[in-house]
Image (cartoon, rainbow, N blue to C red):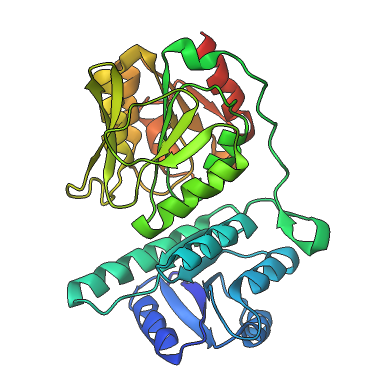
Length: 352
């Protein structure tokens, strides 16, 4: 028999522990080996049970999920999927958890229909599966024992790139919140417009955009729709709608559409990339970063066929080499490079 993925569920709610365990145990390739009500119990269970993947509640008594995660990633790194409430506070905490090394996150299940719970269970086991095969990001101990990633190269000084007429389009999924941050840290304030789709629920994208805006040189906003696309600004797709571009009377505008999911996602990377191929062509630059699945691969191919320069993150620097791999295999990628080198390569393409 094939070896099953061994999962430890950590949640202070007995109801939630039972529900998550039931969903996970229904998957033929995984089993729950333990369920812990708090960090101390989880620590002991990890030593005894040696699980492959942990699901971890963000907010717990005694020691919260963040503090436990920080200690875990420093002392015994392992794949972690955070289970978060769909609140603004929960969103901010979850983004910090991803920064500390969690592979992915999922919201708390909501009892609003049988099909909804089935979809949740499917998403949960898919994320656990991806976490098991994911590459843990390198961390090192910073001041106060925090886990931090070595900072990427800082953005160059003002370059005049904003007047190039180019537009940059970026797509990412699992591992993408940190990959996008690292990419943007190498981008100057006067960059061409950048449009980003990161697979993320709608309650998280505003927090994500604010976090990026506080860290990166360009201005970062959650796209609202019908905005004129301006140099020096990064537009993050909101979690409730597909993001694309359309022509306005004096340039391009953002466009949002709450139409059905594409590739099981809304927002979908393919929707953004297809609009780039159709309307921007040779003036577009496409970037596909870490993530599971195939979303964005076909759209990036259409961008390349339309004359755009296209880049894919390499396997060694991806948390999950899924989307970039699919794009590379179908010939959608002009150039494959590491995340640390991505901003420099894209800046070079703007100048060419």
